[in-house]
Image 1 (cartoon, each protein chain N blue to C red):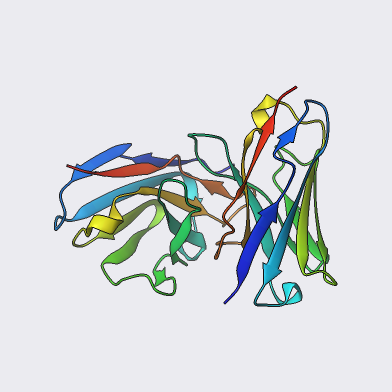
Image 2 (cartoon, chains in turn yellow, orange):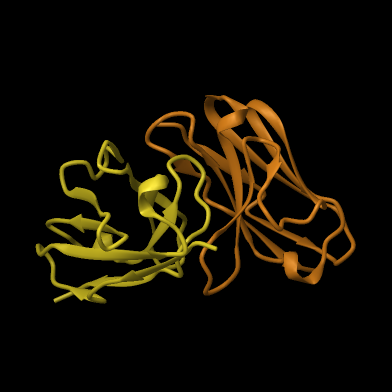
Length: 115
Length: 108
């Protein structure tokens, strides 16, 4: 059974870069699509990006210039970087398996943008 | 961008009752690229239905989905106590993938 675990800094200063890692266990990262979705506190879900084995990548245009998704097959990890963050980027960031529907999801990593 | 609007915002029902949750899209969505999720407080969303009618592994048969074009419905035939949560619809027919704003299903 595939399990996902996000890890990240928790607190990021405005204008800096947010970096998150999703560690995947119970399956090879090379066999599936992987995505990132975020949820601001008390709000709904926003899809950010997906990737398949570095060969297929798609970003939400609302973030396209600031977001980068990547995979490290040697570590079985998916990463997300978001540059020039503001308070509006404060959210729980989830990684999930899939490039259409998403299943399963990690437990999420809360990232707060504040000085 | 396809905007998904869910209704009602909050639905108050009792265990044993039937729940009908709606999701309307701003433009036509191919039903095979449509799904529903359940989210409980403090937890990640859980996939319920994908491809319009396929229940995810472990999802009880009381959850069903119907619809096409711009109007989709999630039906819970007989509510169990564990079904009270927030439900989101999602389209993955066109990029960017989008979610509805959610319907909160609460105990009456």
